[in-house]
Length: 138
Ligand SMILES: [Cu+2]
Image (cartoon, rainbow, N blue to C red; front, side, top):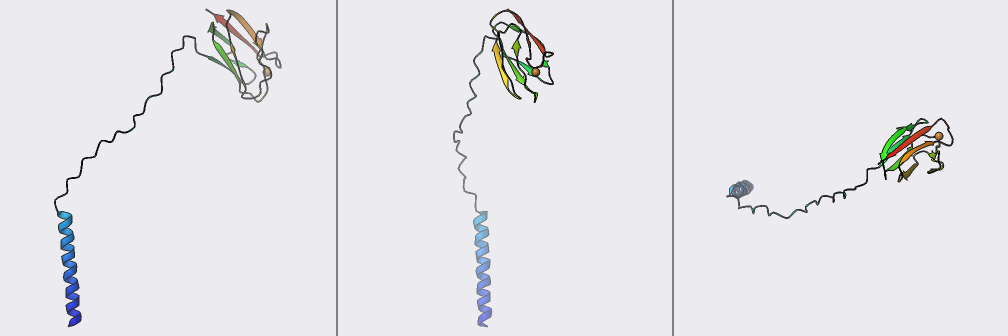
């Protein structure tokens, strides 16, 4: 009898507790504060590269024992960069000796800025059949 009463008491407690819980959860929702507009860090765009009046650089690849493109026409003051993609070493050797890269291993690059008008022929010092030409115009 005592046990039964105790059980009833526990059950009543449970019911009351659940009711209380339901009542609490059903109570009118407290006004949640509007999400405060925290100033998120503004991503400032990277400064635009200053306009360069000089013509852009020109790339020439050295691949499979050939210059590509083999002949280019550029404006005065243009910087040309040759990159050796071959596993074999090459050179950029001007016929008039105005520029000379020296031995270029794979992935080496060599740059030269053409500040005089004219036609520049060049070869690879190791492979005479590798020929290239740079036409420098105004
Ligand atoms: Cu070569």
